[in-house]
Every structure is written in C-alpha cells, then in structure tokens.
Image 1 (cartoon, one colour):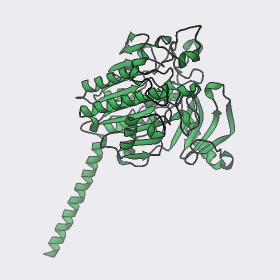
Image 2 (image 1 turned 30 degrees about the vertical axis):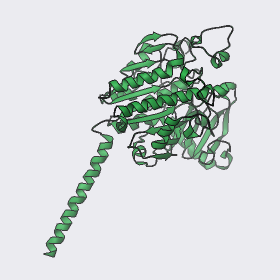
Image 3 (image 1 turned 45 degrees about the horizontal axis):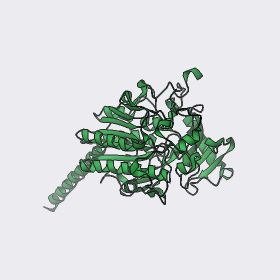
Length: 476
C-alpha cells in the first residue's frame, strides 16, 4: 500500500510542478501580451533641469504631483535623452533610434527652424505608428519640432490627433529694432513671437497665446483621454516650456518662491496633477503607464530664467551630464516595483519597453538603440542598459560604459563661445563617485579608456550615411 501511496504522491507532485510552470509562463505572457493593453502617457518638458523638482532636490520649487509620481512609482536617477537639444532628442524618443541614424541631427544646424525644409523621414517608425497596429488611439499635443511642413507633422507619423506648436516657442521672432533678442526673451510678450498653433494639419492661431498654452495642452489631453477611454490610447504631451521665453497663466503669476521660472514649473506640475486626476476619475489609473522627463537640460545662459542641473555639470547643448541626464519618473498605479532606480535608462528605451508592455511588434528591418526596461519597471530587476552614447550634432563626443564615462571631445559653455577641445587622452569620470564630472581619472586608467574605445568603434561600424534633415537643401 505504501508503494502505491508513494507513486500517487510522486504523480501529484509532477502535476503540481507542471501546473506551476505553466502558470508562470501564462503570467509572463500576460505581461508581454496583455488582454487589456495599457494606455501610455508620455509627458515631456522642454529645457527642464535635473534639479528642478522637489523629488530631485530643489528647495523652493513645489512639485507635489511629480514628487508623488517619484515616490509612489519609480524615480530614475540616471536616465538620459538622445541629444542635448530639442529636435534630435525628440526624434530619438519617438523612434527608439539615435538621431544620427535618421538624419535628425547636425553639427551645423543643431535643430529645425521655421525655414527648414526637412523633418522626420516617413521611413522612420514612431511609437504612435507601432501602437496603431494594436488599434491604439494616438495624440500628439504640444511642441513637435520634427518638421513644420505638412508631410512631417504628427498626423503623418501615426497620430490621430495633433494640437500644438510646430517648433520652439522663441522662433518666428518678430523683428523689432528697439528690443534685442535677449531682452525679448527675458521680458516677453506673446506678440513678440509669431509662433502658430496647429490643429491636425491646419493653422488655427498665430501668434499663439503662450500665457494660456500649458492650460490648453492640459485641457486637450484630458479631453482626448475622456473621448477615448473605451480604447487603448497613447498620448505624447510635449510641453513647450520651461524653454524661454517663459509664460504662465494668471493663476500662477507669483506662485513660486523661485520666481517666474518656478511659476512655470509649478504650472506644469499642476498640469501633471490634472491629468493624473482625470485618469483616476475615469477608472484608468490602474491601466495607464505615465512617464515624465525632459528633452534636455537647462538653458543656463538665461540665468534666473533657466533651470538647474543640480549636482550635474553644465546644461542644454552640452554632452556633460547636465545636458543629457534628466529627472525621470514612471507611474502606473499598483503595477510598478516602487523605488529608486540608479541603473541607466534612456528615452531611446521607451519604444521597445512600450512594445513589450503592449504586445506590439518591434520593427525588425532596422537597428534600434533602445532596450526593454519592462522587467525593471514591473519587477525591479537591474536595468539592462549598460552604456550610453553622447552625440553633439553628428559627432560622437562621449561614451558611458557602466560607471565610467569617457569624453573624446569636450565643449565648455556651448552657448557662450566656449572652447571645443579634442582630447588626446580622453577625460574619464567615475559617475558613481563623481556624478558632477569634476575629477578626471583618465591618465591613471588607460585600460578602461582602451575598452571604451573598442565599444565606440563597434558602434561606429553600425552607422550608415543618411540624408541630413536639419541642413537646408540650398546649404548642402
């Protein structure tokens, strides 16, 4: 009898083990092929510094909603953008590819201007186009800056709806001999800048009333969410601030101890809170991933009208950390492994991560530079990103491998006629002990530099020549 009992127990154990294995497989598939696909909301500030929120250490700017995202979700302390200026940074986020691969970067004209003839090529696949294959409703709201001509606007890159400005809020400046460029930016009026608002493919307002623009972006986002709450949706909200000139609504004038810059950040924080409340009110918070970050660091040349990179070196336009490492929060109610992530991540990773979370198919006919962060988000595992590449236009300036970052070209004070220097011995920094990049250890670590050079050469072998989109055709 005991022999039969033993056999029965063995058989039962096998059945239970098989069932557990299949349960694990099913739950894994549920993460990557969900029955109810999650909504995605990306909130993207313009020229915001690493140290401009309470959660990242600012003493006088009050950001309770962003802080909540950080404390109840995940706060990423080593999260990078694809470039230190607007256009290439945005191209990298939406395509998961370094802008050098799409022609969306240049060392001659670093961003697109109102007279530019190029834009994001139709051959590039955006997050919106990928999600359209999964029947998502998609909206781009806010600053686009990937081409102002109709063929380059969001409706031709996978977005069902667009409301916003086509380029930076300081462009199309109205000529006035009595007001210098700098004076116009530091003491602005709406009619100093002939920037249009475009709805889908049609211009509906010029000049844009920038005093109400953050509020209108927020209203448009909430309306889109409420109209599409029965479908999976993707919203890419790219605020046009705190890029100078700084504007805020009447309700936020004098709101912050930090002055007008703080007013602008606190209105953006209010916007984040309104959007989060709309998700809660419509029963969507538990099925919506919200990401907040910025396109590049603070435009330091504008002093008190610019933000702070905190303990990081330099700001916008620079390949030092202050130019490309951004304050980043992920929030998904009840789904994320709560905590601080100090491993590397990048906006380049958003496309493959979203593909994994939504069960979408990644493009297989091109090189992607992003990695899938979904396991880190959901389970708290170590980030799979192990390196970061820092381009200045179409030149590779620096490379991070693990905790070490090598600068092959340095450029101090980019917007103040700073000196560009080719380094015979690259400057090397240990970013774990020296995130401010103060102490060059290159002379003592030739072996580390050799290893990084090898990684750089492997990367360069993957770069093909493509048509540059930022240089006017007549200037070629």
